[in-house]
Length: 217
Image (cartoon, rainbow, N blue to C red):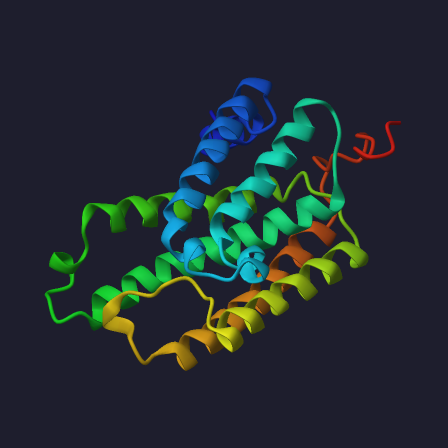
């Protein structure tokens, strides 16, 4: 009798196929470019010294693009794997949550308040969170990397809601910034704990045989 989960096993095998990696790299690369373009107005209105803290989602997908690029050349980077995994999940979930919250708080009926760009953003950001979890099976990073990523992630939250350079929220969410700040910080901690658990658990798929990208061996 055929295994009822054969389709899932087949799909997981595709994750490490070069053709699949090329497709996913292209999607994330183009998505990153579009993401930075999406932030153009906020970037223009932000002092240059705060710019690294502004475009959260495209920076996450750009980091994952680098990870995929390294895999294609049989290299790996523990830091960028940790950074990509944590931020893909965090900002993927965050964006979907904010769009839905904005629709709930809108004066319009829930479905009428969601335009096509909202649906596009929810699908793409949900995909970010999912791909981070799926590719965690290959990641290898340790305490140093997760602590560095944790430090950056929490610092980014402090800058976003302390300085006020967080991604622009829907108009219907005006005045909810303190609640959003608490949710964002909690989501950072959940993301860090989740990827610590996912990656520190042994798996046969881990890319332990790949050399580090900056050592060339």
